Each structure stands twice: as C-alpha cells, then as structure tokens.
Length: 62
Image (cartoon, rainbow, N blue to C red; front, top):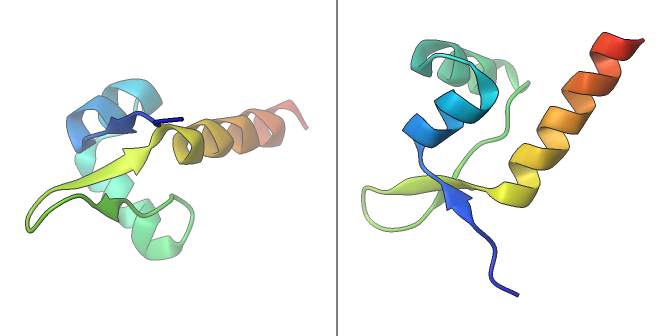
C-alpha cells in the first residue's frame, strides 16, 4: 500500500509548528526527520507524523 508523504509546509499546517520550531526540534531529537525524496526534496511519511502526533497527545494527557 502506498503511503502519503507530506512536504514541510503541509507539516507546518498539520502540526501547528513553524519551520524554525520543526528544525529546532529535529536538532533536539524530539521531532522526526524527513526522508529524502529526490536531490533537494524531502518529505515526512504520514505514518511517522501520525505516531509523533499520538505521542504528543499522550504526553499532554498525562
């Protein structure tokens, strides 16, 4: 089954995070890194973003 991949601007909308925050969190190891789609293109797999969002929801609920 083919999985949807999201580019950075879509990830910003989905997560509510800014570009700067996404990259800062990636540097801290608290946000997943994208996968390379081409020479200059990267994207986040839908499953990776879903898992990250679920983990954030669990953290907030605790």
